[in-house]
Image (cartoon, rainbow, N blue to C red; front, side):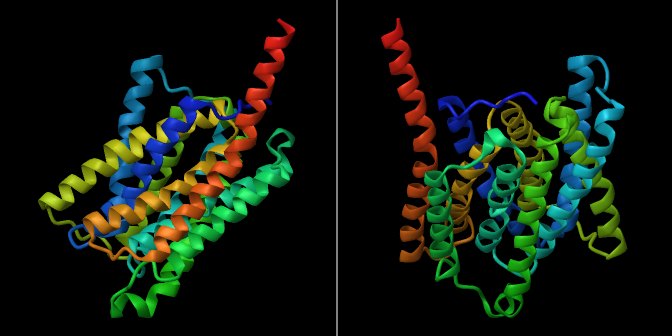
Length: 313
């Protein structure tokens, strides 16, 4: 398979922007839950964004880049993506947006572990493993020990919602592995995204209908939330993510996504008025330290290579 590049300034900058968007995503779903059930939100945004992706493929390529080689992994990632966001939507009914961000973004751990054993060029060094550990400890400190105070109805079912978030993270990590280890990795990013969105629209839409979660009330909050989720999150950010995965090492990109819970809790404070505690500040510092630890080895390697190249010249 084609070797992926280590992270550079462009990839890091794009990932920071994606982390901001993804951090706000849970808040957007939660804020509109009274007007549109979370499961229906995910189904509708997937269907609308999927149609936009289909139009984009037709405009760019004059055809849909379908192939038999991508059909089976495409159907699989569509299923995994649907299960991931089923757990996100259901989990947000019981837990907070901040807690969901924590457990959902354990996905890089699952993906990095899988890639470490399956892809030789993406093995993590001892230094990078220490960075993963530091970052994970930071997430625990920031969110699991006083990062958010739930109301009484949420507290009774929060453990269930948190568990759903963890399952969502696991299925996201599995999706990354399937994309990375199949023909989808070298194929069209738009086609991969279409498989996921089409699967989510059909499966989650059907599940919302069967379970009676079809409440939909038009309001400024619901409309603005759906526009943001559809255009910015589901269409724009996912296309950017898959494009990065085709060019850069997926485990390194996944580690950077640990920044997302930081932006998620900030969005919770700003939009949902969630309390900010000292645990978050301490945890955020550990998260940043972990990210710098993971990234430092790659940057140091590039610096040494440039110095050696300069001496040869």
